[in-house]
Length: 325
Image 1: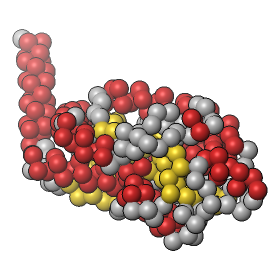
Image 2: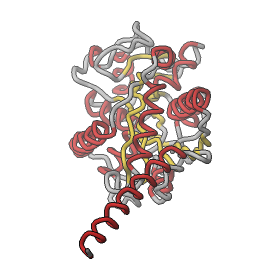
Image 3: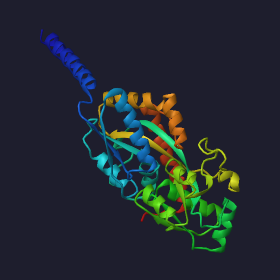
Image 4: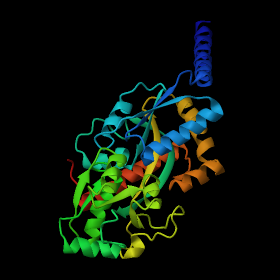
């Protein structure tokens, strides 16, 4: 009799737990979701965040508060997200820097890219583009390399921060071309772009999404994109790989994470809502015009991708000899 009662209680507990999970999933989200972006407003990462959340709000009514937290090459925003309550009301837009480069460059990160986060979906990827100030007498990659060799240590390139993909692109390009350039880190892509437009720096490996408006207006001169294939957004622009440096490739991806311990039901819900927007033909086309390739993944596939990126950048960072600031 006691055994039967115990079994009944256990069964009731399981059913209650499942019912609670279902109710929680159905009622989520009851409040606005804090969406942390580790860069200032106006850059490529911010464009991705605001365009996607706006579409989700329009179709579902789910509200987001985009919280730009630049600094430390994504470390400030990543740490804030990692320490947030795992309740689905804080999500983080990470990228190569926060989850693959920094862990290989910074010896003491205040967060673990794997243990402290649960992947939700990959959001978008876009190439970087090598652009120069119009005053620089270089109209091709070949011209730039010749100029840099004639003026060793005199050309400088800006980036959104130490350890970001544009910084890594500069290090890798300098190594491949055998040139000496000075790296100037800024707190985000917008300050870095502004510095280049005003002539404070000579060149930059900027995100295509954030840089295209300056290219189209003639305020910056493009030389090449950093992916192996030409970008559909600017198909006339050659790649660095085909400009004399075969195999050269650096691109930036953006992905969605939540603090570790977030209920699986919430991760599933977020993945589904973001996938509806990311995989919509109209939105993908719009993002492509901005220089970004939008596409969703399952949480499992994104987790595997992040681990592969960690391993890949470990080799690249070691070869490049990158050190923390």
